[in-house]
Image: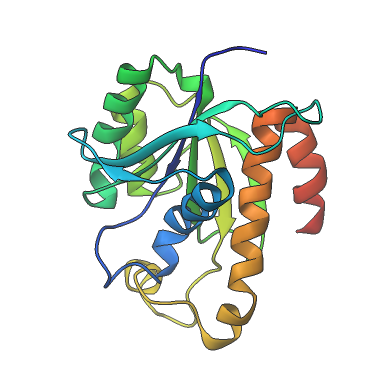
Length: 200
């Protein structure tokens, strides 16, 4: 297994006014992973809150899991690429070991999908990452938040908190997305797709 760490970056916006919104589910997932790994995210000079450690479990029982860098941006979503690039350069992480965890309006709520590369689907955070990294070939864990009802503007929709019904299952959903990230790092992309794509 490579000694190179993985960078797990949770996309979102800074500040308490955005913390519970659909657009910030990526940051929620990184927060869940940080708790599991006993990692404290600290503000850095790279415009990111970041921390390093190991996953609590690996392929071999009793052996620590792979090394990870968990991070979120201290800036806004559409400037996510800069922090990701600086973290990748600092820790020597190639794009194929960068995982972007993000909201996706094209997937129903509580749906999880994973892929490498592809388009950005109008997601400004991914667009910024692709521009800064100079490649689309990083991993995306897509957390479905559903499409806005009626004629509601998509940008307005993702910047609003989850509905009352969604909030009842949101902690489980966030935990499941974190499980998908762990599985991807330990077992690879295909097992994640086989397990989580089926539930959609």
